[in-house]
Amino acid sequence: MTSIDDILGQLKLPERVYPLCTNADLRAEWEQADAVVTAEYRDSMDSLAGTSKAGKDAAKRAQELEAEMAEHTVHLRLRALAHKAWSDLVAANPPREGSDDGQWNGETFGVALLAASAVDPVMSEEQAAALVDRLTLGQWNELQVMLFTLSTGSVEVPKSRRASEVLRSSRKR
Image (cartoon, rainbow, N blue to C red; front, side, top):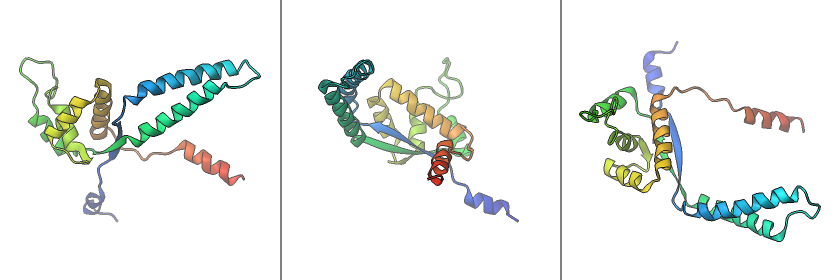
């Protein structure tokens, strides 16, 4: 029979990894190359000639840019906050007087949550604020969703249908 002490000793908080491309300006060049590839692919569907040299060159360039962006991607490892740590963080960032912040200060809570959740690299609130100041609004929104979901979402044991299909199809061979 398992005791509550055994269970408490086994508990680990969920973690997620946020990929952050530090050379995101390459995206514009990739979009140009991908637009050529898309147009060439569409045109080649109606042609017996296949893809042109320009289409192949654009496809190669798109893949080179994808690889370069991947090389310039760092992974922020984030860990959920336990209930008490979450409550303490909310209490440390109360809503602003006269604002429609809700439960916490809309200006400070997200940055504090990032700093408290960061496992690798570890960061202070000042460092988290500096990072947020360098992100686009879209990147920051995406990261905030991950942070909030990580600490407030449920944890279910995942089941990969694709993994099952891959293993099932490899057994048949």
